[in-house]
Image (cartoon, rainbow, N blue to C red; front, top):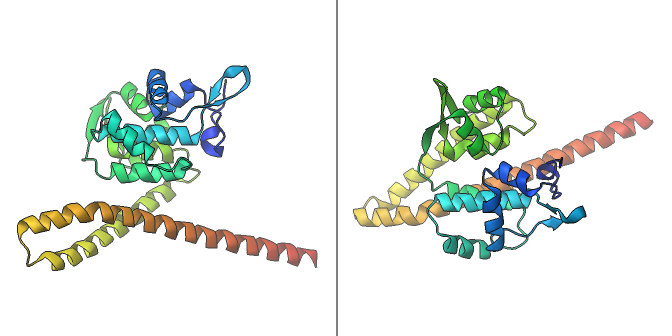
Length: 248
């Protein structure tokens, strides 16, 4: 059986069946996207078996998100063709986050089996409990109310080596700071449009909302990268100091 470490290391080790299961689509859909040029070809390994990696999974997630937004395959093809060919799985996830931010709130009641299908994997009872703690899923009388906009994120967090407490604390920080940013930006924009006609206000909102979302994502991404870099550099210096001290 093929391991799925490729989703962690970046190496293309997923078979087409495993890729389809992870993405929550059918093998036929994966092949269809491949023939349309929406999905890069797999890496051909021994015995002519195709293998897929994180980038394929991230691109599938982006395509599915675009479809949920009502885009036709032709429109999706134009969108994908405009993307740089060497985008990493991380960069593709950012693109999907921007697209998903325009999706209306979608909460559906599904069966347990359908929840597994939507998640792209078999969820244990512990997994469902963790998703419930993140307010992604609510179990009611054997059925599950699921926030489809958060499901992919919640499932991805199941594999992150962080405690449940750390994930929930992170969620609280993000909500508090994003609401504060939204409040301040809204106050700023209200000052700009207070004397304008209603139509002008709507027009400004339509133009500013995607720009603000992109700006927030980009700014946060760069800030987080800088924080992590400083943290890792500090850790490296501490390790170096410890080694020097031990060698005396």
